Image 1 (cartoon, rainbow, N blue to C red):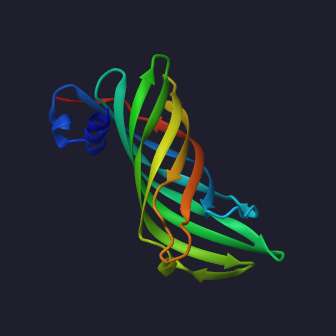
Image 2 (cartoon, rainbow, N blue to C red):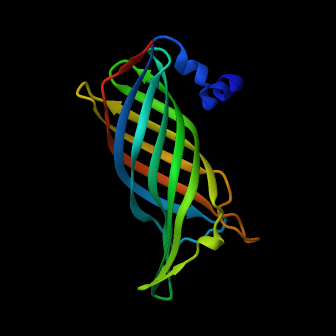
Length: 196
């Protein structure tokens, strides 16, 4: 099973060259509810509500299985209130999830797979004062995604997923900070293009 997942994760180009693989491009967008896991039991961390927007390629390997790489702009981070001042950590990523999807008959699908992120910007806001803190964060992030979706016959669908950040994103010796993002959104899949 691990080997299979590994092979599917890499999406070898040879798969795409074989006959009858069909690719459905799409667009998607939605809402992020993001927090940061800090390892401490600090209970006054609140989520940052932000957005995700991007493109997808739904690649059928068989009637039940597909691989879906996506490229998403994703607003992440968290906020915290300390002595009545609201501190916002606004981390914006370009995320590349590569999801293995299992389709269940009626349009439902469950999905899981790795996600690789590149940090686009990092700002710390205290009240109305904004500071660039990109130096304090690693440029790359890796996580694992769990999700589910539903595709209607019109090509529109809805999905929900959870991104469990696996890598330490803070660039210092402090305790590990990792991304935690729950997102829900809508997508549109264009009709299949057959590759022979």
